[in-house]
Length: 213
Image (cartoon, rainbow, N blue to C red; front, side, top):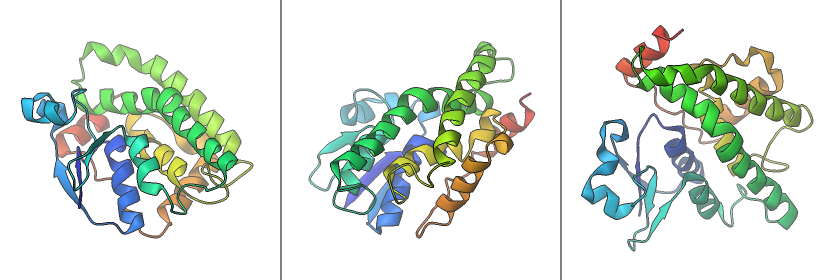
């Protein structure tokens, strides 16, 4: 039995959870209140010294960190990861893009708007985050104007990785109406068998998002 430690409103945590659901694999979910310090306790740091979620623990106690590494391991031998070496490398390139060119802007803008006070100094970062996030979305739009998926010829882990925070990009202040190909892709992902939506933020966080300019 796989145990997945994560924060329900985190896109990074939802990635392996969504794949587990779509693979039909049994797993145990352990909710971790990371915004309030639950990843800094001695018990959690014994699992992941980096103090971040998600953390995947196999039945034999072996631990895996980093959401996209989990996607690759879980998808091995399944249709969610291409068998062809070139197609697999293309999928991996989008995983790296997600972590280096997408998540640091789209996800961080969402965090600042929903998990920091309205007068927090970090809110000064939002204009730059929106600019860089839109650059990443433009790259995705160009790709999706030519092909329906990121993983290759079919839906797979690169789509899961990029869907996680793109699907809630509006929380970060991103207007996706200018990206019709992304909109169509989001609908295709939501229509895949076994799809599970990421839970909504807690009411207090949702209220902050709503109140953010």
